[in-house]
Structures are given as structure tokens and as C-alpha cells.
Image 1 (tube, helix red, strand yellow):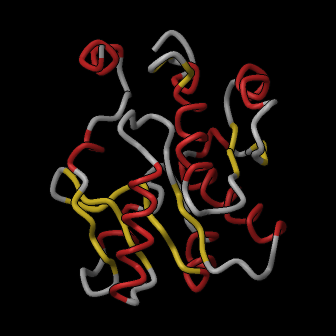
Image 2: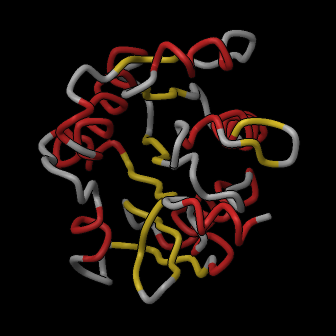
Length: 178
């Protein structure tokens, strides 16, 4: 990409700020931002926002290490949290409304997981009840929670969010956004 994707400008702010602001507008707390590569460049952008920025020293391992880091940080913040939302900063359409829709789906279905559905499968953002924290803490590799989100339709409340299909992984993705 030539620059950390968290710092790519979108609607006048870096993507990471856009994602944080969306989370801060939703009925969730705390908002934890997991930093990996380029943490020293991204941390200053978050300095004035009411978030917990935690550094993932195992970031080269892949997305699972960031999930583990975030879930462990939630556990350190409070032992009484009901669950957590995993979100990415590279989805420009991510919004507080997406989080609200996941919360509603989980409440209405009683299922322990609610996930955005696009491109024919479940993905991020996703809401996990606390009962899934041990599984999230045992994830490894680059696939993150994808297997957990798609292993059984009876366990996951899927919420159609085709707008989240676009994520920014390449310069061509950024050009399509512009």
C-alpha cells in the first residue's frame, strides 16, 4: 500500500479514526484499538480519542494474534463484560449502525455470535458473547475468527451488510473507493 492502511485518508480522517469514531458512537464500551506494525505512527493519531490503544507484539503472526491481544485486553479491563465486537479499520462502510444491527440481532436471536454477512459468508464486524472469549484466545494464524463465524449457521446470527464487502487491501481498492 505504501503506507499503513490505518492512516489512509477517508472523508477527511485516517481510516483508524473513522473506525474508532463509529465504535464510540455505538452503545459499546470500552473501545480498544490493537496496534501492530507501525504502532509508533498510528498511536499519535489516537492520542485525543477516549480509547485504549494496546500494542500487539506478536503482530507478524497474523490477525489471530491481534484478536487474542484485544480479547485479553478486554478481560483485563473488566471481568464483567458481556461480550465484545471485533471490527476492522479497513472497511470504509463500517459504522455505529453496523454495531447496533449486530447488537439487535444477538438480542433477538439469543445466539452468542452475531456477524456481518457479505460475499456469501460471515465476517467482521462480529459480536461475540463472553462465552466465546476462550475460543478467541486460542486462535492462531492469519484467518482470524473466520472459521468460528462460519462453522455452523445455528450458532451465528447473520446480518446482511453488503456495504461492508469493500475492504482496502490494495492500492486498486483505494482507487475504487475514491
